[in-house]
Image (tube, rainbow, N blue to C red; front, side, top):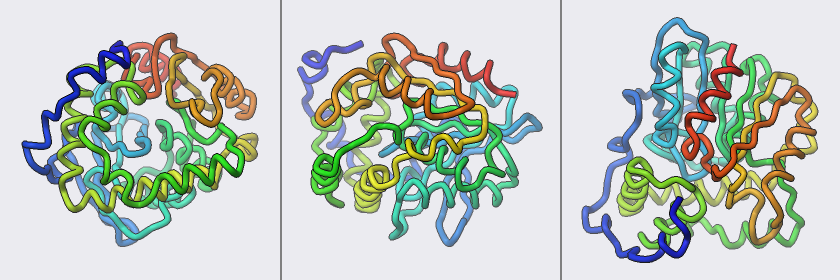
Length: 307
């Protein structure tokens, strides 16, 4: 783990001088394919095979490459699929709501388009909130849920929600410097910074230089507003499938350190209480991207959970 002071020290720009990268050049653990769903270009990976399908949904400002330690690992015994949500990664950037319910509908239609009738759905952070919406809106598509540091259970008062919406304008992500990107990755998003995280930092910096990143900045703003407007807590009791909930004990993003405070354990236990058929795992020392920080523990729990 890199302490915040060390992470910020020596944070001189490294990658801006390399120039922009195209979304299609982002690294992915499996070969990237494309299909059109509801007039939107969807980039995805699909291992194929005869195993039970497992669908992975990334979080806010993320894409398929954030599942570095899961996709190839689970492809050994399952048909593994992961998509870049519209607005992110190598997918199209439509003028769309980008709310969790809207994304859930897109995922359901994409699953139909790629021949997946029903699957275990794994979601991280915002992707966890999207996965829960998918289970609520399209229960026929979800066999079971596995949630990595899911958003959607934390409550915000009107003032906090209004502040966050006003702060995350549709140009905000475009304004982030390389130093700010690095500080965010190594002090908030990841607790264990390895070569894969360094690759993600480089990709984020260089993608931010591409004009197409303007569409991602819009998606981030609308996604944040959508998560705030569509919390899952009040509806979580209607999730009818077996659910694995995994948080890292040292998550620096959930609960929100500015507006909520407290410990991740409290949010995790609330989620466990609200989702009827759930089991909870809190991985010591792991952070918000718990499946990356502690891949062995996360993968072992998911292996045991899968049918």
